[in-house]
Image (cartoon, rainbow, N blue to C red):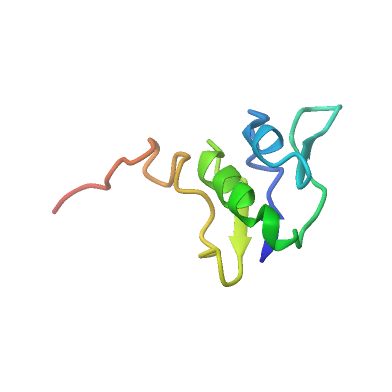
Length: 89
C-alpha cells in the first residue's frame, strides 16, 4: 500500500488524523493533512482505507493491492455534490 495526499484540495476536516493517527496528522499552520507514513504497515491498512473513504474533499489516495488509486468516494466529485450524477441525455 502506498498513500498519497493532496493538500491543495484538503479542507482540514481532520477525519484522517482521527481515524489513522499513526499515518496522518494536521498542519499547525492551516490544518491541512500531513502524511506521516506513505507506506504504512499492514496492521494500519484498514484504518487508512477508512480515512480515505471518510475524507470529505478527496485529498487521500490509496494505491496498491488494497486500494484502487482513485481517491475517496466520500467527497464531492466533478459533479459538485457527493453522489451527484451528471446530466442525463
